[in-house]
Length: 388
Image (cartoon, rainbow, N blue to C red):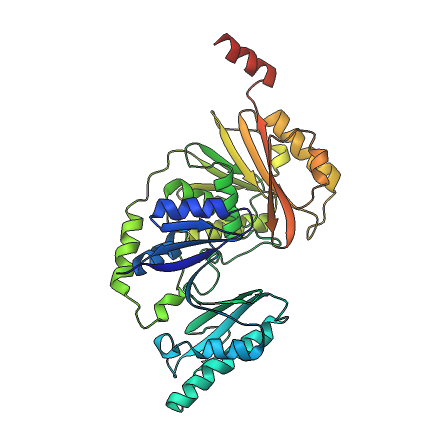
């Protein structure tokens, strides 16, 4: 099987993480860009990337590049592609367009023009034409225009890869699964210790933490990928890849705990964890984090997504002060990470973060921050290390 170029899309700030994931999976010629990583692999690797990557939103397979500065160039460029290699007259398709260009202002206009070129080609050659289906297309085409450069790609994934397939119940402000996985990897979570999400909502961070700990492929619960409707779909190859990935699953000898004070959130989280077949690894309890204390011995890895006040009504100052107080008083020996889109609120935590990483939660600029809670006081820790 020959190698071809692919592009994995991701969030801002996750490019290096995704590049590392691709290298570990065995991708060739890995090159990080902005919100994307280019790489090479064969058909089997395309299946593997979709199944296993935690920080990818989509895997695209570029099929054609050309230049266009007006609608005529655009139409002609699209018409040069032999579309019957990828699409049949009885099939449906949809076009997703991203435009960063002074020549083309509206992505919808570009999609329409490209659709016309494809449909006209089929009509002229066969007298029939494939139709558009925005919800469940057989083939999803991706058009990307940067200045005068047009890139045409097939979307191998279909629905965004953050749709893992385990989350049926969501809370008021659920966190994107890819964002959750990326934050876990940025925080250095590797499954070699106890883990806690003290404000777990619908359980996404818990599920992603367990899958990382056990090396379970991120998208093993997904119902389908776009490539399954392609003419070269190879179910036997896919089954082989899937089995090889599942053979790498490992045991986990620590605890993963989630708290939430809302009974409805706890029920949803338990449902989602069960859907992901992760209930053996994760315990979820209904309680208010501010009334709890650390129950495990040894280092604790904590990561959570506290309410921002964007969609949830809380007293911001007091709430963030309580986070700091609870960590200080009740969670020694803890590396506590959380994400917030409320940069002002961080001042009220009353602790100095040892790390701050800029991320985006949707369109909202956010920070992933780390607070290191030492066993005993920090001073004692340093005195001990000097004596050692």
